Length: 111
View 1 (cartoon, rainbow, N blue to C red):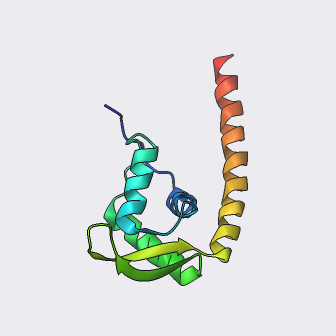
View 2 (cartoon, rainbow, N blue to C red):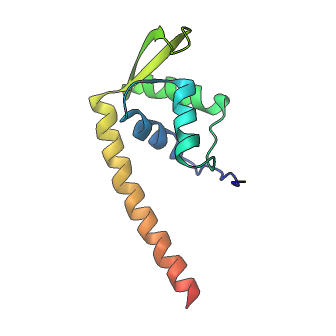
């Protein structure tokens, strides 16, 4: 059984953008992809996921279009935009620096 991990502030939009680099997805599929890819460690609640997707759409980071799902249901599919890819690159650089800094602290704590 995998223990879930709380998302840090500002992480959700980064995870959604990264997920959408795999192609257009509806909201439920975005949440499922994140959960599956993290072996159930990260579970995105609908109450956080959909407001984030709508914010990202307003910012121009994603485009949305209604289409039918694999189960023949109508759903809004989200696709990362050029602006979203630029934002993702900025956030990836920031996360790389952050993870390196935390790793240094963790290594120092072992000494």
